[in-house]
Image (cartoon, rainbow, N blue to C red; front, side):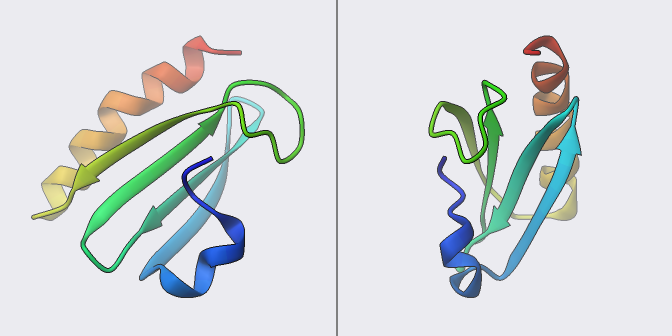
Length: 77
């Protein structure tokens, strides 16, 4: 998974959220890149994941990225 739990201290912002029964990880790095990692199986700490990246230039970019990715999360269960 691109979002590394062990690297929380280097992210400007980090969150985990249960999406469709799987823990999805979100992180914003110092270059304003929003990274979202969605596990593709139910194994804890799996490396089998879909990773999404977006350069954040405005709050609208965050909303647009989530609107694109959340439907993906609900299709892969």
